[in-house]
Structures are given as C-alpha cells and as structure tokens.
Image (cartoon, rainbow, N blue to C red):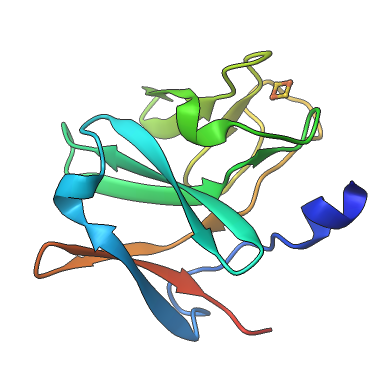
Length: 126
Ligand code: FES
C-alpha cells in the first residue's frame, strides 16, 4: 500500500512537463470536487467557484490510504484553500498539500489551468 503513496509527487506550474485535459469546466461541480484518472493516479479536482480558483491533489488520503479526498469537504482557513477527508477529517492545504492539523501526513498537489472552458492538470515526467 505504501507503494500507492509513492506514485504521488507534487507538481508546480513551472515544473509541469505536460498538461492533460481532464474535462470541460461544467463536468466539475461548483464548490466541490471530482475524481479523474491519469494512468495509475487518481486525482481529485476542486472547483472553488466562489473565488474562480481550481485545485488538484492526490485522491488518496495518506491517513488510511483511502481514495476519498475528491469527496471531502472544501473550504478555507485564513485564506488557505483546504479539503477535509470525509472519513476522519484530516485537513490538507490545496496550495501546498501540507496538513493543517499539524500532523505529518501530506498530500501531493498539481497545478490546474483553464483554457477555453477546458480543465488541464499539470504533470511531471520526473
Ligand atoms: S482516511 Fe482520511 S482522514 Fe482517515
């Protein structure tokens, strides 16, 4: 199972080597999340429609290794967009994947861009 976690590594806009189209903006719920697959990866994509911002992170919660984060509660703490796992409420920053409960669990995040109403996620081959 640890192997699953190792599949996920954060990508930043300037380290993305490819941008993968994952759907139309209307495919994603407003102020909510949806899961997309990219190879072996499951990626949670979040549409913060109130702020017109999009975020992506691993769908795998590192706490019990469950593929659930796309179904988590979203919100923000002091302006940091976040998702809380629906199972045990571990909470993660969608900006850098850090754990907002002060625990060691972290998640990988990915850049998102919108072009012509299509949603793209940035990945790195490295
Ligand atoms: S599985 Fe996500 S917090 Fe426990």
